[in-house]
Length: 398
Image 1 (cartoon, helix red, strand yellow):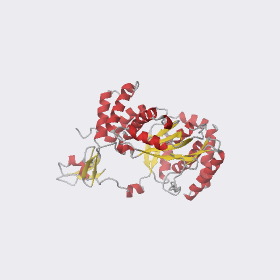
Image 2 (spheres, one colour):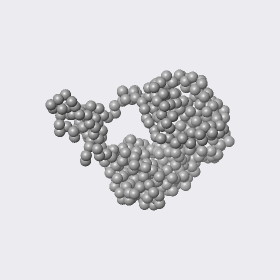
Image 3 (cartoon, rainbow, N blue to C red):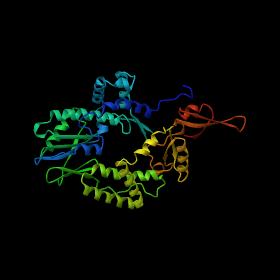
Image 4 (cartoon, one colour):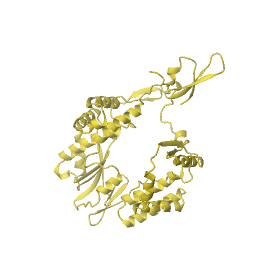
C-alpha cells in the first residue's frame, strides 16, 4: 500500500456496519427511545388496584449477550428487510461475515499483554448496543408470549436492558423466574424492583401512582445526585452553558405532567444552577426563547436562516474572545462552527489504556534528517510509525 492510500479505521468501518444494522432495531411496540418517549407512552395510563409497577434490569448485558444467537437473529431480520438494498450493496452473507468478525475478534492490551474477549459484545463498539438491543427484542417477544397468565405483563416498555412493566400484585418474583429461563444459554439474568410508596423510578423519570389510580410523572434524581453541572466560570463558550439551562428546562416541560410539580422542578433547577454560578438572566433568557419558540414567534427568523445554506462545518478549539470572533467571521460566509475545549481534566488525568509506543502509532508526522546537511524532511503517514524506521527518522507528533 502506498503512503497516500487511505486505510479504513476500525471505528469507521464499525460505524458503517452499524448504519446498515440500525434500521432493523427498535421497531417493536415495546421499545422506547428515551424518557421523553416514555412520558408520551404513559400519557393516560391507568393502573388497577390489583396491579403494580415493577422494573427489570439485565445484569451486565453487553458482556453477557450470546453472540451466536445474536448473529442468527440479525441474519433472519436482514433476510426479511425489504429496504436493505437501499442502504447497502452488500449481500446478507457479506454483512454477516463482517458482523461475526467484529463481534468475535475483540482484543485489548493490559500491561503489555494482549487479551481476547471470549464472550459477549465489546464495550464502546458502535455495533454492540445494536446487537444487545436486537437480542433483547427477541427475548422480550418470547418472554411475553410464553409468560404464565397470572404474571403476564399488561404493559412492557424497554430501553435497552431497562424494562418497565405493569403486572398483577405479588407476581414480580414469578415473572423474574420466567424471564431468567427464556435465554437457553443462561447468560442473561434479570433483577427486579417493585414500586415503593406508590412510586417507581425508570430512567430519569419518577412514576407516581395517584389515589384515583391515574399516574403522574416527575423528574427522578438518585440519592447520589449532586446537582453539579458545567460551571458558568469554566472555559467554555456561552452557548454551551446556555445549552445546559435549555436541557434542564426542556426536561421539566416534557417529563413533568402536573403544573405544581413543574413549578417545584423549575425552582430546583434555578437553585442548582445558581450554585454552579449561573446568573438569573441566563435562565430567564432561555425560558423566554423556549416560550417564543412554542408560540411560533421565531418562525420568521428560521425561514430567513434556512435561505442561506451552510457551506460546511468547522471545528475549532475554544479560546475565549478569539473563537467567537472567528465564528462570526465564518458565519458571514455561511460556514458553521463548533467549538471544543482543547485542555480538559479528562485529557490530563484519565488514561484508561496502556501508553502506546511511538513505533506503534498510526496517523503520525515524522522527520527524516539528511545525512549530508542540516536539512530535514517532514512527512505524514497513515501507517504505523514503525513502518517508516527503515531509515533514521524521528517521531514528531500524532
